[in-house]
Length: 136
Image 1 (cartoon, rainbow, N blue to C red):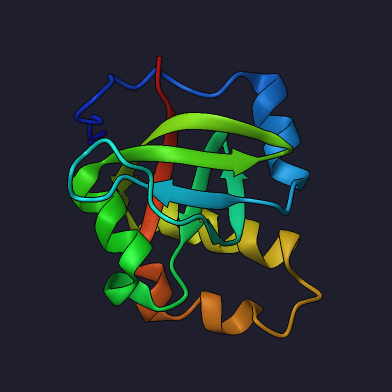
Image 2 (cartoon, one colour):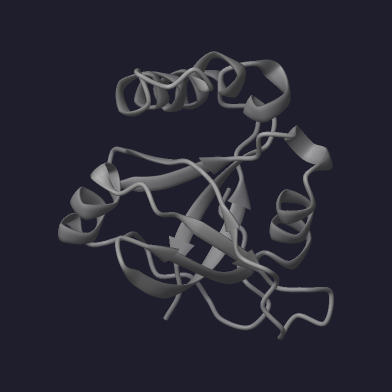
């Protein structure tokens, strides 16, 4: 189920062109709203992957990560990716083992050379997976 940003409603999906650019980009910074629902939080640089045209990210420190907690509580904010800023909605990914496995595979492919790959596939970060959706 997709959750909606308190400020704006999400668009369906990223365009195919954007998703292709995001799939190779490695500059994702997330800024979920602070608790006031209007002020963007401090940008946090994180890994991202694209699966079936949809953008996903995981918190290294799992559900205790401050950016993850803000993202799931506020459900919106902005990102910087592929050289651009975007207003977004965040939706927690839970209970879909098949989707999580596909996201794992995308991490393995994109970050294969990184020493940090295996920790990102563990239960703690896996439990803190979010979909990042464009907003109008």
